[in-house]
Length: 300
Image 1: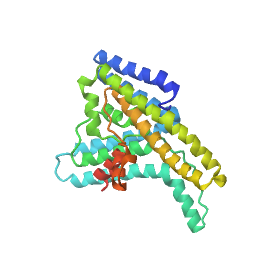
Image 2: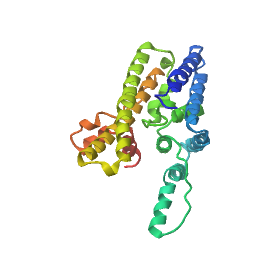
Image 3: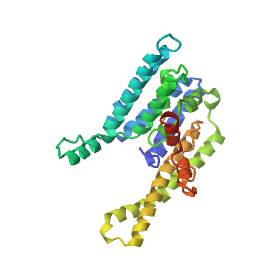
Image 4: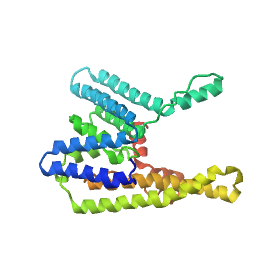
């Protein structure tokens, strides 16, 4: 279910909004979070229902590790055990990510380099696996550092699955999201936030449909006719691919921010005019900002 599809705009999004704010209007805030979580899982399963056990299993595993680490907080002599639990959780998350995203690539290169004949699995890549895996790795690391609170399961599940940012980002952190889910002042429909959200969503939709998809046709034609390209058309192909890549990714992130504002949830900016950068360092500070933030905070 794509953000620019009719079924999303005309059915899924209105249904998600009506159910969420309908529950909140009756003071059933917990049911509102449950509704939004269920709708997010439906959104994810729409692409392929086989993806659903993967993300549900990932949530259950990481939440169980989080509760174990949280239960040891303040206890004498358990710091080393918490480190092992955190390391095991991170290793498990990375193993799942490696298997689904890189296993066939790794085996194929081994076969070429060593003249072996290991069988490729042709693993189906689950959508958004990098995003929800990185979010949960960051959450476990923050828990080990003592930076998380005692979150209920539904708050955690919604933090991981919130559908606007589930497929293409931005990568969010618990401290900027879970507090918003529990903020009573954000539970009622607000026309100012909704109008801003619609504006941001339409801008992102324009980037995707009017720019990324149009340049994408030129890219598809170019890669389909590589033998007949001249030097000038090859340069045009390279430029078109850069434009398509940026406006596709940036457009989706803008649509995600716009949808978040409809639910009165603020998502972080993920792109800040990267092609206006004056050097490569500034470019990476403007491109996929939340991914750079993740690596700076949890890797470097």
